[in-house]
Image (tube, rainbow, N blue to C red):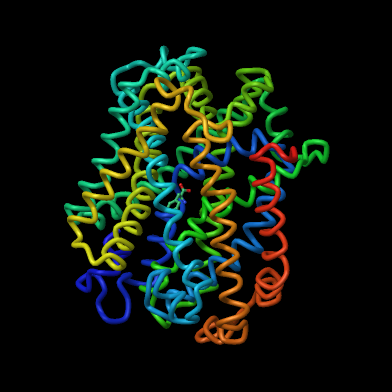
Length: 463
Ligand code: PHE
């Protein structure tokens, strides 16, 4: 998104880079809605408890997620800066500089492996275009594919290059416009596919699993994964919304925009869950191995749904095209943020930053991509490279970044100043929730999560 680049004044006319009232909402939604909703949410929900995961997730999104999204946007709007500069402006301590950097570094970890999944999506899109509809629905197809080294690596590089071409070509706005039109189409198709999934024989058990909380399915991992997912899905705790906030008009009602983004993002996630989880029960009888499939779940389940639909090939082309676009707009916003950090902090030119970042993303992403094949033995604290990058960013670094934001807000900026910012041009309706989340809920939850996820990763406790 051109509008996220803090270095290009031409994209930031005085006032706001976002055109019209919906500009910021649409741009933030384009960043938020992506693989996190369609690919990551369903597999986490399936793996970490179904209904109980959903409840914890929703509570987090509408309390802490809301508070963090409000805070980040407001910090950006107050300072007009990206995270490192914004943190500096409010406090000149080393701790605060660390907080700013932590926010800025997270997208550097996420972007490379995000593109690996983006590559899987491109492969499936091509597969539907070339009529491999039946083959892709066969058990074991996906596992065989990701361990085949060359193709996944090629498609991953294609996804990175596409992202870079869009950015270097300065056509983000074009892509964003296309995706604005596609978003509603994505919702409609998701509704159609989820109705189809939910009406298959046996699917009802999946709907129950997804919506009826069962306390026996609860574990500490339910909270850890739900919180990580909340950050990931709303693009929080990684500086992105601070950067976006710096372009938001002073007259905009932040609470209203935040509510829209949260609602839209959650809607897409729940719809994706409804496409995939009931289908696991309808097509695999709720097999625990499939429920625990993790990153492969969408790629294993959706092809089965499509093939049984009768018009699977055209539906598959449309579905994966839409997922591809959602992934591309998110990858653009991740890459833009990283490139922005390099240009701002190291003084590199835009083209140089983009090329160096692209090379880095291909190198790190290749380790993740080949981690399912040639580098299968490369394990970091017992995890495959992709899982490790996902874990370290979502369960370790993002809680630290979020904690840094909470401390900045409560200690350095002050809740009163924040309230003044929110009340500029609207009522601050959820003020009690905001204050409670920032003061108590967030710090306590973050510290518990951070400690427990690190201890469990090293096998000291099992959660
Ligand atoms: N929120 C995006 C998604 O759900 C992922 C993303 C994370 C995008 C961080 C930008 C920044 O897919």
